[in-house]
Each structure stands twice: as structure tokens, then as C-alpha cells.
Length: 382
Image (cartoon, rainbow, N blue to C red; front, side, top):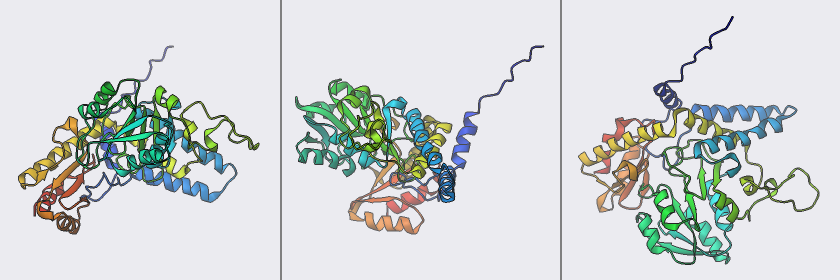
């Protein structure tokens, strides 16, 4: 007797997205995801469960906690699109960028002076000790485009460093276009913190991608990822690699061990299993809904927020075209009244970031309620 195979229907895309949205419970006035993203219940539950495991202190607890590192690496590899042997974990974006910068020994790195300091100081510090030079282009608010990069390059340029989404303006860099103008001989280093998990980016043009979990991934602090192309892994040296980045790391024989052949050569020490587990849970939740669906929800929210700002007569300083932006909307507050408007927003229960005397940065995620958009626009315009 032959038994017919049981057909299991594929999960409905709408149901998967709904499940993702239901995993969060931030306040309806939260418009500050570019600052940090409130984590999901899955992330909180994972952290609590791992803490309880550690608290019990049973035999084998170390191994039970250590598996979170591999789990997080596997999830990061899937979401980033890089092979597992080309990804490593870092405790934060800044440390990953320092490792990328100090791994370059010569030549000059091209970077905008308008970058967030986390993506500027590593290259400046490497230049200070005489390893690789720095050539600065653009400036605050200047979009890093392929044309800007092409015009600023020189024969000494060995790498270009850029943010996938600019923290100040919300402009989304054309990574494929930048790759085209710099060619295959130069490296492309990408700070992905304002895009990863929320913008459906093809990360393959990057030779090194660095991101953290506390913003759009919504994993809390303490874990992030680095991913490398073959060229990036070959040409960026693990100068800051530590004892966990070598072969036979548990053989403590007093000799220097050979560095690992894969991306884990950049490991410095054991990562917090609590942070790694939280990072893994957040990434798996993103996978369940898909970055593309999350981005579509974010884009819809950004459209609605810009529409409210337009109706209130508030200038919008961030890109309007979906292809040119992420989830950041920058409102212009004239007359140096941004601090006053920001305080009024907080009084109304709206979280945002004050940027200088004339700008307020609002940021939208897939879970953001549109209910507070007219209120935010009203107070930005006062």
C-alpha cells in the first residue's frame, strides 16, 4: 500500500509578517529607530532564558551557552547573503570598523567627513599610526554618490568607506554604483548599521560589511556582525585578532598559533552568549518576515510621515524617492527652534533625535503606528 505524501501548505506571507509585527510592543510615539530599536519579546525571552541557564550553573553550562555564537553567525550569514566562513561576530559596529581599518597597511582610504564618527575615527586612527592614509571628501549632508567617489579618487586610493544609509540625511548609498567606479582593485568598506535588517540591500558589492544589532535589527546591545568578500578577507589583516581567532585556541601551550583561515580570524575574545543569542533571535525573526516585506512596511510609513510634514508646511531634508532612502526622515525646523520643538515632541510622547539647531530626525520601522505622524508634524512646524 502506497501512502500519498502529506502536503504541508507554505506559510502565508501575510501571516508571517503579522506574526513579526505582533512580536513588538513599543510605544506608539516611538519614532527613533535610527537611535536604537526596541527589541521583540523573542529577544527578551531569549536573553532571560540564557541568563537563567547561566544562573543554574549546571554541568556543561558553558557548552550550552557557547552554541549561541554559531547560531548567531549562521543567522547573520543568511540575512547578509555571505557564506558562513566569510562572517564573524563583533560586540559592536565600532570595533568591527576599527578591525577593518587597522587591517589595511598602506595606501589611502577615501571617506566622507560627513560620516558618523564611528565610521570616521577608525580610519583616522589608523592614519595617525602611519599604516594607511585618509583622504576626506564631501562633508556633512553631502550625499556620497558614485560621481562624488569617482571625482575624489586618486592613484593612492586602496579603499572607499561609506555608510549604506547616512545617519544625518537618510540617503541610501548606491553600493553597486560605487563598486563600478572604484573597480575590483580597491576595497569597499560598508557601515551597515542604519540599513541592515530594514532595507533590502544587495550587500555583495561590499568587501567588508560591518553592522550592529541595536538599531534596525532590534537585538539590543552587545552583538553585531562582520562579513567579507574573498578580496576583503585576503587583503584586510587580523591585526586586532585575539586568542579566539586562531586555530587550536583551547590549546594553551605558550606559543603563537596560526590565525584561522576564515572570517573568525577577527575574533578577539569570546562574545557574550546572551548578546549572541539575542542577536540570533532578532535575525531569525527578520528572516521569518523577510527584509523585503519589512522594508515595504517601512517605506509606506515614511511616505505617510513625509505627507504629514508636507501638509504641516515642514521642510523635509531627507530623500523622498524610495530607492534613495531607508527609514530616516529629517524635518527642518527653522529659526533655531529645533530644541524647543524636540522638547514639545517629548511632552507629547514622541521619541525622536535632535540634530543641531534646525533639524529633528524621525525614523520609522515596520511596526510604527502612523497615528502620531500628524502630531509630530504639527510640533515640528511650530
